[in-house]
Amino acid sequence: MSRRRVVVTGIGLVSPVGIGAEASWQALVAGRSGVGPITQFDASTFPTRIAAEVKGFEPGDFMDRKEARRNDRFIQFALAAADMAMRDSGLDMAREDAERVGCIVGAGIGGLGTIEETARVFAEKGVRKISPFFIPSLIINLAPGQISLRYGMKGPNFSPVSACATGNHSIGDAMMYIERGMADVIVAGGCESTVTPLAIGGFCAARALSERNDAPAQACRPYDKDRDGFVAGEGAGILILEEYEHARARGARIYAELCGYGASADAYHVTSPAPEGEGGQRAMRMALRDAGLAPEAVGYVNTHGTSTPQGDVAECQAINKVFGAHAQARGGLVVSSTKSMTGHLLGAAGGAEAVISILAMTHGVVPPTINVDSQDPECQLDVVPNVAREKKLEVVMSNSFGFGGTNAVLVFKKV
Image (tube, rainbow, N blue to C red; front, side, top):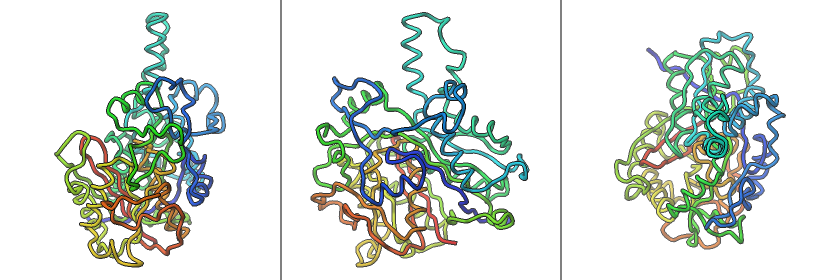
């Protein structure tokens, strides 16, 4: 069976720097941070009191009040991003075979906010006050479930759950379904909303978060020698993936071809990366093999780049191992971490950064890594410090690595 080509025909993004792909892109190119004091709960006693929250999100812009009330914020984000992506793609479900259209959207944690609030209600008022929508509101696979219900999509429908690699795994798995002829169109990506007391408290306990509370916009600083941890974020990133001939037949605009997918496990440690990012190396090499491309073909890598002391070094070492001289050549490979502005969207990171990587290729502009005041000498790469850069791009890569040593890498190219 010949391998079918997979292209991107729609994008949707809800991020801490903007509602919508265009608003987010303009903020990223301008180097604007979405990090600020936490507003969703009282964090005054927490070691970390900052996060990258989505601002100005109105569920009513994307769903009625009843639907909004019945769904946790992470599902609301997924529905909003899917709505944007579907509109962008011009896909008309009335003209499609519903059984050939699927939805694969994951999250890393799911409806933790709903769990926390319901636990409070239960403790104060008893079992009879638990909402009948409690379970459907928190389960991760209700994100793609609600999307499929809205549009009548009857194809493959499920949620990968792989911590911070979730979005990339969702997109990569969707790619394989289309390649094998099991679907023609799949809505794919990630969503997350866990700026909650337990989540922030848990990450604080793990000493994973930046404590630069007095300078939120400077807190997330990948590759800078003074970085002190990541900044938690929230949002959703959704792609419409489509079989190439199917997209052409309906006259769809094609953003890019999704041509490579790699996945691996470190099998090393629960939270720390393997030495020299060995697992990430294998995922990147697998993605390049899958795409049939040499490392020198890649012009830009949107890195995982979380601003943690160990993670940033390991990823830079991995990229240098995989790309060799191309990673150090003048005019060669450039990399950046847009998490420096969006914070770490956890399960939504891969979906959001896939959208950003595609827009970088579309516009010929690499968004910067902000807050690089003194680059760590152990992070020897061109990280596009502080200012966006024009660069013609034919192939881009997006990395996502998660707790548990899980790694997922995507490669996109111009069509």
